[in-house]
Structure formats: C-alpha cells, structure tokens
Length: 349
Image (cartoon, rainbow, N blue to C red; front, side, top):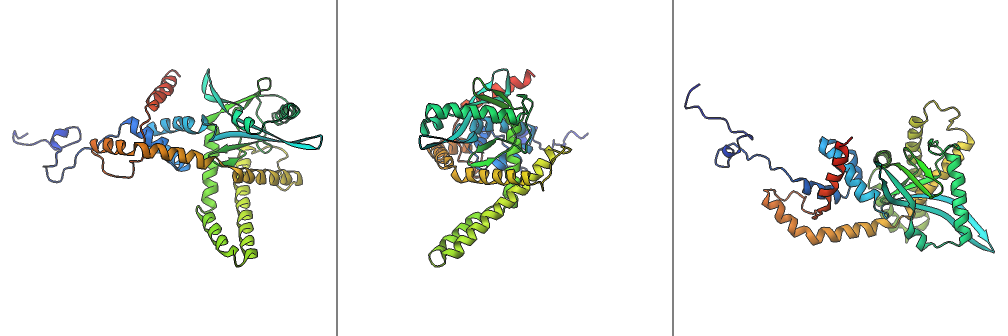
C-alpha cells in the first residue's frame, strides 16, 4: 500500500467527514431517546403510530406500546370498558344501568395485564340509587357468567361480547384477551397489548374502507343543503350513516370468522345472530356518537405543546436538526424512568 494513500471518509471516522470535503456529508445526528419518547407521546395519529410506526425498528416496536400504555390505557378519559345493563324502573323512575370501568392499576405480578374497576368519575356524574347500584352489579355478574360460559377466566365467545371498548373517542366490541373477572371486587383484568393490537388494527381497516375524510365532506355538503333542501340533506346523512354501518359490519364479521374458525353453530344468516349483530353495530356507533372526551384531551395536549415549543426548538437546533415538523414536542422526563421501568421487567424475563 502506498504511504501517501488517504483513508476514505466514513461515519466511523467522523473527524474526516467535514463540510470542507466536497461531496462528503456529515454523519447523521442521532435523536436522543428522550426526544423520541416525547414525539411518540404527542403524536396525534395513534392508528398510524401503532400500525406503521412500530415496524420501523426493534426499539420502536418495544417503546411505542409502552407509550400507549401510559397515554391511553392509564388515562381514564381516553380508555374505558362499558357494559350496558339495561335499566331499572322503580316508583315511576327509570335509571340506566350503565357500568363504566377504567384503569386502576397494572397487575403487580404481570405488567402485561391491566386491572379495570368501576370508573369513579362516571359514577359521580351519574350517581345511582342504592337499588340501581345493587341491580347493576347483579346483572353484571349474570352477563359475565353467561359470556364466560359459567367458568370465569375461561374466555368468552367473541360474537357475544357484553362490553364495548372506548379508546380516544372510538368504539368497538373487540375481545379482551386473557379476560379474568373478580366478582367480589367488581374488577376485570386482561392483556392490554393484545387488546390494543386488535382494536387499532380493526380501526385502521375500518378507516381505510370508509374513505378517511369522506364524513367531513358529507357533513359539510348536508349543512349547506339543510336551509334550502332539508329532506335531501337528511337523506344524504342517513345514507352515509347506513353505509358506515355496512362497513363496520363487514370488518367485524371478518374478525369473527378468524376468531371462531371451526366454531359449530356460527351462521351469519341465522336470525338470532343477525339480530344480535344489528344491536351490537348500532350500540358501537351510538357510543362513538356520544363520545365527548376527545376535545378535552386534545386541548390539554395542545396547551402542553405550546408551552414548551420554544424550548424544544432550541434543543433540536443544538443537535443539528433542521425544522422538519418535529418541534411540537414537550419535555416529559418521566418517560425516561418509564422506559427503564418496563425494560428492567423485560430483561428479567
């Protein structure tokens, strides 16, 4: 080898990768873990982040579910499990027996499981009589025993769910993997990762088939028509509503076919099944229509982002980043400890 030969510039030899060398770029700047965690946390598109973002690399595959556990599962305004148990009529007064459960804690022996109990905020807003509260839990025990086939913890049939999962304003009667019930404590526990996987995958498929953004266009058109042709505007809205129900039914049936493959007696043409299906589809659509948590949650996030935007811009610039749309992130030091907490558990098996 000639003694005058020069080593080629490379990322492993960053001192030679300078701007002064023509045609040579600086090594890529590595974004610190803390900033990635903040970006994930304040991402406004959970379907894309979960279904696509996790596939970028192994670290993202590991981190993103933990962020979802922090942002969605543990936030009682974001995620809840609802049981519509009918109503109770006493002395001419009717009380709706809706049992709403939300996050209480992770299973101390298995962090892959979360425990939900009666949501205190919902209970405070809809304070029941003692008779209604007693009847509510009695009916809940009955429907859970029927759903689980009389053997609690055995798992229930996905085509007969007594619950609806609410997640950031979306609704579905997706199964709760590994469901276990503590009737005495009025608690349920399930595998949160499996629930998120099924819920978000189906939500993405529903959104894809339903042509994202089409609803806003229909509503805008109907609003313009309402003054001069209310009948046509109403027909347009109802047509779109029923089309949505049709898409939801298709996606739901495809899920049931996979889950109940080989299950005797599953017949999509059976009148009993069709009746249960119609009730479930309308209940899911109704829950989404009633959801009012998105505005409060998103406004809170926006306030946090705005308050810390300048600080984060300076941090990114100091690292050599240009304005690439990632500046709306906020300092969240707890995430470093959160990831360490989860990773310690992962390394221990």
